[in-house]
Length: 126
Image (cartoon, rainbow, N blue to C red; front, side, top):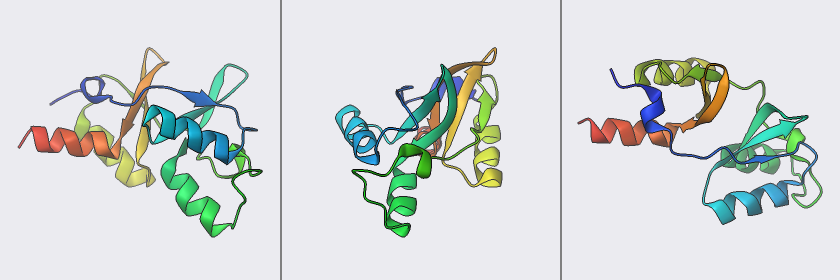
């Protein structure tokens, strides 16, 4: 079975929890990514995804210029070891109801595996 480390596509860009949602949206747009790690004190404490912004910020009627990342980020992080299989990743995403996993090696962050990465894997293996 294919290991998740082969399919990590998104980089580990991060933003602080007190940054505005507008700053996060700009950063995602400029880097053509759909998620940012939320970092505080040198540690990843959560993840902010475009889904978090579109669903939570809109539902909560937040002003993206003043609302903080911490108000809509997803935490705690769901982590998966880089040597686990893509099937393991899919099962965890389904069980936890998330679209992004932090992939680690020896407990060190490597990258993000998104649901889109999993779909790309499925298409490539058909």
